[in-house]
Image 1: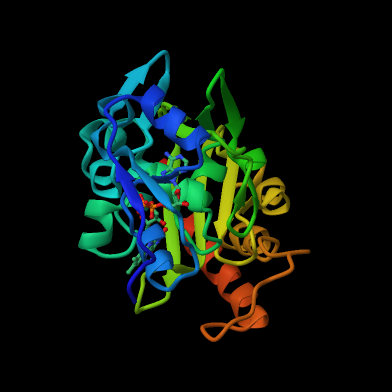
Image 2: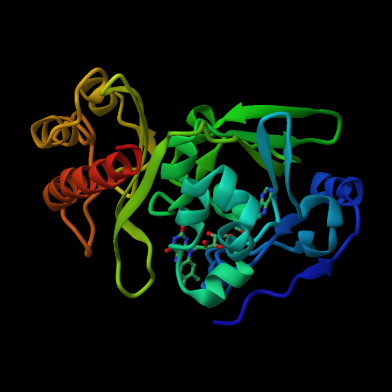
Length: 284
Ligand SMILES: Cc1cc2nc3c(=O)[nH]c(=O)nc-3n(C[C@H](O)[C@H](O)[C@H](O)COP(=O)(O)OP(=O)(O)OC[C@H]3O[C@@H](n4cnc5c(N)ncnc54)[C@H](O)[C@@H]3O)c2cc1C
């Protein structure tokens, strides 16, 4: 449980960090995933570049109808931010359900997103929120949708030499009901399944629905079949059950010591119904 020895640098600017990353250094954020991997010798970087002292990566601010959350904002700061709670309650709720207080105080949104654990919580919310991940490289910056960012388990659209600068979500439209429900693995808190829902009603019918799913398969996704089933329905108990029954349709579910694929799919339906009902409860 002792990592291989490594060099450590803690720069104060993004450009310094990028220069170090270009020379082969690995970013270190909260260390909640990277340090255990190093202790288990699943990762053995020779040089760590600590992002924790870069002020330009640690912020939560609003601008032009969007919330900008810097990569090193901790799960605790996202959860406890009055701005996030008021303008994007789904993200605040999700951050508050990650791990335990120690993990929430150390772990960061950028680290979680870059790590792309298939059981992490943020992917469900970021899919449902149609978030953008802003990536900075040595020469340019680009924004990638959550849909295009998460490629596979532990694989993302990040290219060598790049780092995540921020996550951007739209300020939530008034009248939107949101909810995140997860069946958690009790020892770690990771999602066996996690379902994030956003919906709106107009004229008594559901006029907008987004459902993000995590934990079920190798990558978080939007359950578009379930979203479609909700659209233009009144959101009755039967409508909710019909939509929830589609949430895992066609998905190649993971099977591990915590849950078989069959059980995971079943629980995805159960938790989707709970999340849809809870979101509907906010728009009635
Ligand atoms: C006991 C325990 C319980 C947990 N429970 C949960 C849970 O219930 N739900 C959940 O979602 N997660 C959970 N986690 C994971 C936790 O959320 C981590 O915070 C997260 O996965 C990694 O974030 P970090 O800031 O610690 O990143 P680090 O561990 O420092 O880094 C992780 C990876 O991301 C890279 N990286 C970091 N920042 C950047 C950046 N800005 N740009 C590019 N690459 C970057 C690193 O190089 C590394 O490869 C748990 C972790 C532990 C230890």
